[in-house]
Length: 497
Image (cartoon, rainbow, N blue to C red; front, side, top):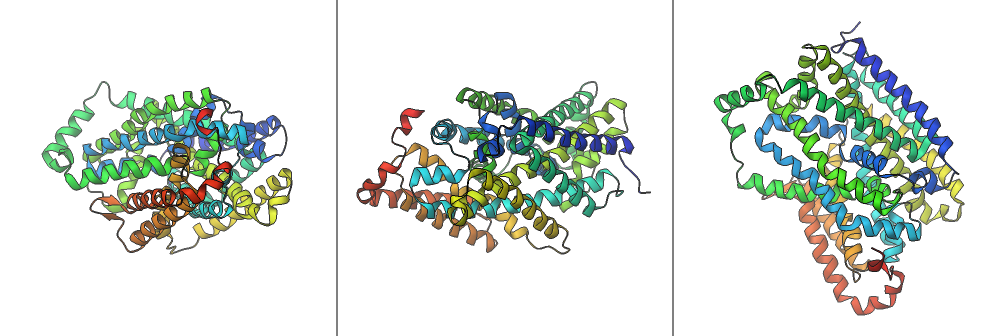
């Protein structure tokens, strides 16, 4: 039998967690009032502040963040503490548009981001265009989660569970509890994931840092042996960080699953309270994972390239052998990482099926079907999408990473539909479509040409700048012609805030 680096206890805890997810899904189904799209995809728009906070937290902090950020801290050193600002920027972007968008959603009964776009701009073509960009971005995101969870479960079990089995089994579990419980089950599982991760990180660091001089010793070693990791960043790096703040802030805030969580809030008060809690989470979560990367520099020397992304699990394996408390906290963190990937995957799958059934197919053939039928079709699409992506994930020599790199760069081009759509009443459908087309072509072209950054600025941010310039210019130029369509925009929108 393959060696299990964390012992059988870690695997048993993971199995117990997965079984509990199934139980929660049946409880969530009993809470659902009907099979309408609002009930299934938005939990009846009844998520309170605490559940909403945890489900936003789980959406914002995926397993990729928890694996990738320690690796980046290992590569760059202390300067990577700047990544706290990346995650805080998401909350700032939310606050620009989320409260008034929520008020509009309650008045006009939005279910998907496309409902807002159609209502605000009065253009089915623009809704379809945005829907296609959403689908491209988050389908690749879901594929990345499946690949990540297969590798992590295989590593956690020491190879006892092969990669393909990890992908297939966990994909099936996600499908079961999502199909049974909908958004309510996803939100509850997000709460469990958030608690596991938060408790594990804090408990682990509380055991490692006090009573020892690990951080001081690590700092002294870095200054003596790799001083560049303790140095101040240079100009190009600072420009890239500013660009990353814009890219992550606006792109992550307009994830379809994030927009739908705004729609699912019980009240404006619940939404604002959840954002208040969210503002402090980067200080805890990102500080913890960056510190793991720093402590790993002297302890796991010589890692290069993709191996640096194994910093978190390798260091946890070392710490788990030091004490029972650290072992328990390590199991919490590792299960939390698996759960974080699953929570991101289930959220993306839920949004992807709703986008396809309502914003893409629903604009044509399915538009006249009753909501119960649309919900049923959404569930079928979830199974079909997952089956296709699992097959792709299991295909050897897969070369889809170019598209995955386009995720943020493409997604950020939809941000003006929400931010300018909320803040500037004169922003019209023609300007929005022209800007989004120009920004997408520039960002996609630069990325596919291998120019992911130009003078330190991300292709997606350059595309967003062009997007806004073109969108504002076209909207201003066509203001007189567009006046006849303004009545289709939400007239009391400003007052509704």
